[in-house]
Image (cartoon, rainbow, N blue to C red; front, side, top):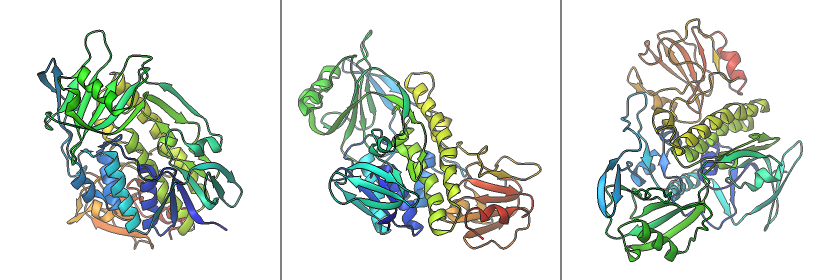
Length: 466
């Protein structure tokens, strides 16, 4: 007897995104969290445009926009004097095909918004449940906890971070390297006498590595402090020590740091788990890949792990799709995570800059088994690609895609009446898509394309759609 079809371990952005996606599909899932509440810090503060598209589909875009804001330009300081602006990346302007820009919002606020949406859909989080062991059999998974009774589920998803207890319990290794051998501090602070128009940057003195930055967190009164220390330093997380670091490296006094709200230390590293699936257990987010914060790829890649897995679990559990569909999760997401890890590492080491690749709009699955390109002369948008936004006879495509269904675009060609669970959009040949039939998956990627409907029905049967 299962307590829940899906047990999600971890209430970070990964686990909450997956919980929302399953809840809107009518698939019950329980999120369990070892702590007594949500994560309190700003850590993953940057949302890339592709993640904004995901949040549009999940119904939280307005709340995220209201709770965040644009990234400020950098301002370099030396000896209390402003040296000039520093831009981390060229600005990205929205287009019809990609309508959202990136956004800064502290992670704690993103999680609160996702939690509220999950609860609105009837989902629940059980706090104070620290997982200690996992056992599997042919029918399901049993999760054991330090306190409280075990829980039984058909599938379990590890969304419990880089030190994942689930990953250890199922014996899955993680291979990686130190991106930077120097210890770092990240903290949320309130500072008097520092304007909020800039991302304030205090470079190290010549021959030193001890930089510090203070970034105003949009929608709050807080700054995110990031500081790097010399090798061998034991980072002191006490409020007084945080204040002294600011006083030593900036023109500010210790007492100008009026509050230290949260602090953590870390060493940037890049690591990838050996597998994303172990039987009925799936690894997602930081449990599967750990990034340097440079380039803002970690949280965004994690959200998209959940978005990829959610519709597949839904198809198996509620649509009757063959469980082998779940194998495509590792096939599609592990390669993407590996690429994003390499990008984050290169940016951290100064070998690459933020730019088009960090927006995550060009990621796709062209060479994966779920992508079927059957046209004789494929156009610019192909099976496996992200489906761009646009307008077809007055219909905005993202409006048509929004929801847990598939969408069939018939552009400049005839189309059959769609089967149950597929929304049809008809129109002329499109300047972005070209001509043909485009079947868009529930996660906004093109799954199948054709010049005629031949093969469409056979493709959809694989997912329980008829």
